[in-house]
Length: 251
Image 1 (cartoon, rainbow, N blue to C red):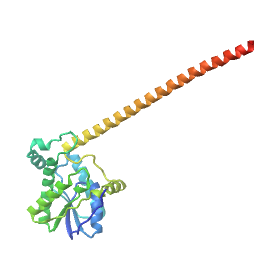
Image 2: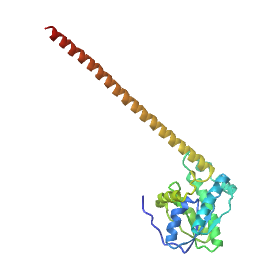
Image 3: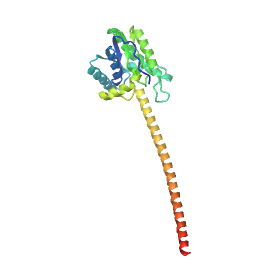
């Protein structure tokens, strides 16, 4: 994995966060560089509501534990549904049933970054960043493009960094902190895709298990055959020796 290469940090940054675990390593490195942070939880994509509340409270508790200001954005799941609905069907539906399509994700990023950039412009923040790039399952180039577009529209500066090299650290840190770690990106289509992916991987593991069992069965059958052949050979040899001994005894 390539090394994390930080750029010159802003003095005051509104950092869009998608969840508590993904915040850990980016927040650590930004604080070490002296950045004044405020975490902004703007994630109308997350469904159902109970899942949204769980992730919100996890991120909020994490920020409060570090003494970092935390702001919840507007939770507007219908707004998310509307912007995604505007994406042509042929580019918003997963083609393999398991991989989130880029253009659906682009629409999702756009909605959330627009909200974050507007908030930053109205509350004295010079820059807007996001923790989304920490995940290897996200489209980092599109995140970069949409963050720049949203910031230009709101007249604030984008601060994009590719945090993906820090992903292993986020997993370790979130485990150590006991943070809730979700198993899908956020929207219900992504949950279906994640579930399908897990089912496919389970099926693949089961197929490999069956194949290995078949190989072992064939190997054991071959070994049993060799043992039976050896036993039969030993019996024949014993009979020959017995016959020779009997003939010698008579002579």
